[in-house]
Every structure is written in structure tokens, then in C-alpha cells.
Image (cartoon, rainbow, N blue to C red):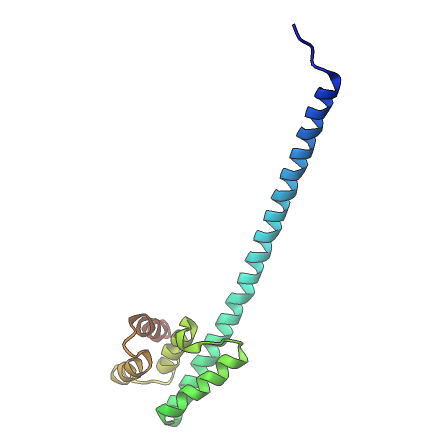
Length: 138
């Protein structure tokens, strides 16, 4: 029967300990990353809500004031810029906020459809987002 050399046994034990240490380090890094990700998505959610609410309030005030549709979009651009949103024309929160603002501004369902058609330009996703905001604000 062969005997294992003590140096070989020590090397095996050392590799096992180092392997466990690396495994724990990777696990710890992963957990830290996941935790960081969760907290940043929470703040992102608050930022989205803040943006949506500002769009809603702007839209409601705009509708109540009887402002011209052409000027409406420039105001949206300013709000988006303040919230560091670079492409408000493709942002779901923009359209949900507009829908909610149209409801808060007491537009009729017929008026809503005109706004929806003009702003969505045939994009069913944008139209759906607006409808969602309009429906949620009942």
C-alpha cells in the first residue's frame, strides 16, 4: 500500500482552505452587489415617481389653462431635463404621467383620445402607457 507524502497532504489541505476562502469572497461580493442593486433600484423608483408626478401636475395645469398643444411638448422637455431624462419621447413614465394629468385635468374621454393620438403618433405602447395613467387616476 502506498503512503501519501505529508507535503502532498498539506498542499491539498491548503488548496481546500484557499478554495473555500475564494468561494466566500465571491459570495460576499455577489451579495454586496445584489444589495447595492436593490437599493439603487429603490431610489430609481422614487425618481421615476417624482418625474411622473411632475409630468402629471404639468399636464393637468396645462390642460386647465387651455394652452396650445404645440407648446406642451417643450415644457415636457424641460421637466425631463431637470430629472436627467434624455429621451422623454420614449420614456414610459412620461406617458403614464401625461395620462394621469389628463384625468386630473378633467378632460373628457373624447379629448383624451385626441391627446393620445397626437402624442403617441400611432405607437401602441405609448398609447397604452397613457391609457394606464388615465385609468389609474380615477
